[in-house]
Length: 512
Image (cartoon, rainbow, N blue to C red; front, side, top):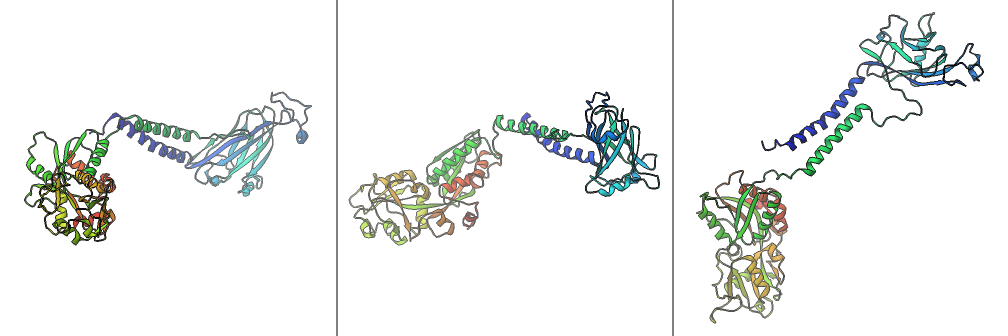
């Protein structure tokens, strides 16, 4: 299992912790509140008047409103909050105190209760009725250091407070609330004074945040510092791409990008013409002699006799007629093109252009583009015979027209750009980027990728990929073909002016 590396194990563990920590925090939060809970906390416990809080009486200290309390020494005020902190309502029957009239007991260590005021929840003032004795029974009672509270029913989040005047002892002495709840508990909750600042995080939230932060830092560290892994579908090995010179610029870019994304792969593009490339694949066969795998690109379909070849349709490629910039002709009809390539018209002035001899710069017999011109434009007729070695002068005075043959699309474009009166043909993308020449519309239709999509431009062809049988699914040949036809290579094809077969517009054209 290639994925079972230390980095991947750490990443998986970190990701799982990142999922578990919030879930655990949520479960903890629910469990701590679930059921019947009564919480109590001291919200205030302070000395009154001149009491310094040292436990010594100061009879001369001004006590204000409390001077009418006989025997008052070291007076303190305490505010105790009693609340339902659970997720269930609490009824009077839920209290487990054996005393049927009371539910909870509040004890002030070392102090004496002198007076008690009940402050109800602002949204539940009816709770006051439970603190009033009925026929001498129930209600709230206090004696010595103890307050006995009635069995007050509390809905979820309801509360009441006790404002207690105390004497003796000192502020801060222990205050405790005791009692029981059936299937629940009475517990102390955290209390904050007015000057306290609430914590930014609760302990569960802080723990969850720390775990998540560690997980994120761990994953970020793995991403930043680990060696980049090849994309899914990459393969290693060597592959040689042969065939179409017209399609070679796009294939070189595709090979370069695949190699950058997939280390360990070596793809070379060695184009010498569609026909020669297809024959090379046939002759190489599947000998398995250690040579690089072969893939041939062809401007058009293979011969029917090559039955052993596996065919993949890559894209619709547009081709164009190109003329030297000295020829100011922008459009030719199909009939005019046929007359030119039959040798019936030998000077551009006869087609509305300048007084310049027409020089035919053609491809050799291995060219799929040449065969495409014959099939798509010339209605099956061949071009005139070879009459010039330098593409500028006739080999013999009796030759009707100047016509040379070159071995690649690049050579054709350079020659047309150099020679006045020259005309040739090329793949559209390469033609559009060559200076010194321009493309010619055919029957008023401009060569473009849009024209390919709507089928208005006739000088187009499917670009085929051929291999000797179906390549192994994990081979570099199979991976590269998938990259070109269905993967990121589609954007490269579009950039070079081709219409990928596996796009909505290209699929219909490629299948027809």
